[in-house]
Image 1 (cartoon, rainbow over the protein chains, first blue to last red):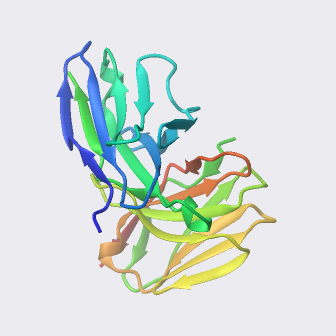
Image 2: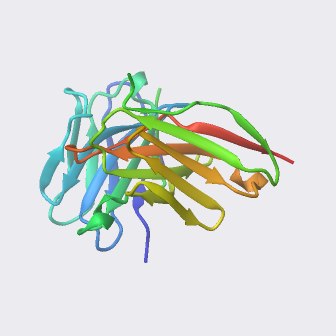
Length: 116
Length: 111
């Protein structure tokens, strides 16, 4: 059973370009969460999605950031017009569909974004 | 006040001893509590979760929850050098669907 998959693992962008980060949840999971982690800091919640719905986006910056989780395909975190401050590790997590186990999140390997 | 607070460390513990990691949270209605381990440059890995007051044991790990004191801890018995990592406490609040993470405690096991 494959775990949470993220790609690319490393992404380099110049200021002003767009970054697209992809996340495929574990099989049987329909809940996806995105987090950002700056060096030597903890994980900051960004957004929680279920298939075709954004459930909680309270941690998303109001501008330049967007997320989707279509009916088919991976979840996408999109950052437009990147700035140096966007350089961080972006982790995706997924959780199962029912019961208390729904709350347990399993993390992907992360995408390390570097903005030059 | 931060929603989930942890001492950043580093916490240095001799090999074979018990490592004790602590976490406090601000939302009294929180229901679910998690401990993750994160090695440098890697993703967080779930170690344990706990929902009820008291202790929960899994191998060398014991999670302790005291909702009255809004306190959750992780004990690691017979500490090994491979336990050296950052330990993240995470809490699911009463109304939110998201999980809030503490900033982590760096643990170093010295031989």
